[in-house]
Image 1 (cartoon, rainbow, N blue to C red):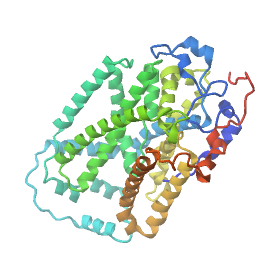
Image 2 (image 1 turned 135 degrees about the horizontal axis):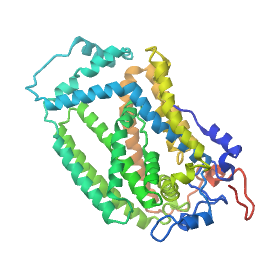
Image 3 (image 1 turned 120 degrees about the horizontal axis):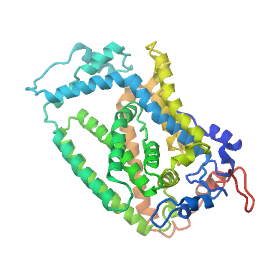
Image 4 (image 1 turned 90 degrees about the vertical axis):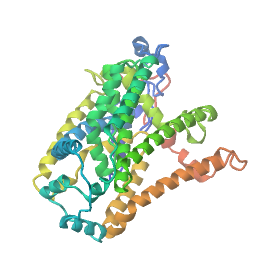
Length: 483
């Protein structure tokens, strides 16, 4: 599903000065004080990085640009819609497949020999390789397919599965290390806070995985993790960042791990070999990322600041930091409590929980109803990347999505089904390789002709207010806004 540029809603709200947004840039990764300047969080923290209420009242409340406001509202709606949508459309399948998986685990597998596919499976295979899209399958037929066993599962029975004790052992070891980290280091997060973060991920993992499998869009648990930690452990910004990291990264990496297992299943890679490769790759990846991060902090001057060279201003890290200020320092009750400026945003939870029910009731009456294609968790959750993403990112995404998943899929289905994933992987790999080549081949060595290199294409985007972050209304010297 493709979404158009949501900039018009932001423009209208900004020009109407909704929630004092006209005194701040329309799109920014920063949060602001009552003078329209980036919020200086150091003024409201003690030396132990704990919230100082007196200093907060003397300085300023925290104000959000309109993109932050609407993004938070959509993320609130997306989280509740994720649960409701999953329960309505996939609740029965989840329950049946869970029981089936437990039953298969308890059964002993006998010798596996050649078993021919049934006529239905052969017809489906020929349809997939043909020029026309596969036919629509009714609900009864779909349930029979899910209850059956496909050819990939039959072939994979030739290999021994990775024992659950391997996963359990890694879980216990990593949990012990995590508890040691939060208890030994001064992050102000108790061990039961860590367990709460893992519990949230466990509950929302399957709904987020279903959306990822359908639309390749990860429903982020980022905001709900920050919000819950801000309620349970208020005034602890470091604890909020650690809690959010364990909660969000566990879900994101778990879904990627499941995706790799699925790919290995189709490629007929032995499960035990795939498990070992994943563990080794995870260890190497962690050590490499930490080493690169420390190298960047040492060798890139002004990193994660607006003045950083070569654009190393860390937009995602700043969003993460601002979230720790909002929910970890100031706390959700000061944003959504009685009389708070942003209290109306909490109604988005109720709206997100109710709307999927209406979509489900409308779609379940007719099998070919267009309402069956409406996925509200994707509609709400896809906009959670604003900020730091901009309207340009979404416009390009919508254009590419329409071309590949509508035009090409309709006119050349055989090509689309065979080469789309390969082309996507090739483009991602090519971009990563080109980034390494450009950075280490030209930018980092600092060749003479690179220093001060400038032309129209490197400067034109800096001329407008998108780059300069101009507010719609400008305050005079000493003026303030807000209640």
